[in-house]
Image (tube, rainbow, N blue to C red; front, top):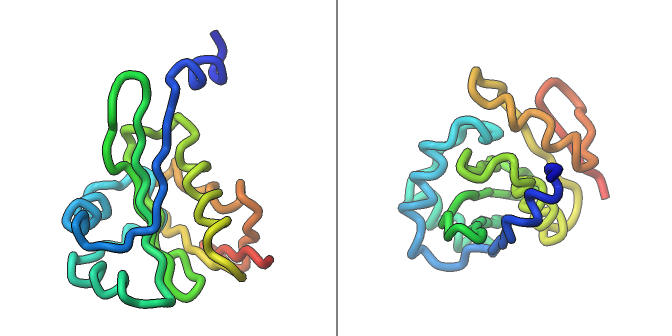
Amino acid sequence: MNEDEYRASLEIQCRIERLTSDARLPRFAELFERTTQFNTTGRKFSVGELAALLSDPAAHVFSLGVSDRFGDHGLTGAAVIVNGNIQVLAVSCRVLGMGIEHQFLRHILAEVPGTLTARVIDTPRNIPVRNIYRDHGFAEVEAGLWRLAR
């Protein structure tokens, strides 16, 4: 069985949504705090900061839930975009290697209009995240700063 066949056999389901209520904000804050391998900037948000973003019309806060034939992995990804700037994109290591991170970013790109910018701030642990923007058509305009003009 090759890698694509294996992924298909997992019957992976993604639930991606724009967050509109603050019921899960403590878990969001925790995800940003604990996710180090697939975290573009290492930016952390308090529950209060996230709650303020939910009422900001220039902000988009996305959640990613994943399940497969073995069970529900729960909230495994989060992203914050403000004024067209992806401030952080984080995906739990529990689902890395399933292609989930690419599906998550494709959804974000489809939902957020206009030119987008994003940063990747290199850390000793976030090697898996470093090419995510390049792989989705962003151009590096200076070291660590990426732009997708549409």
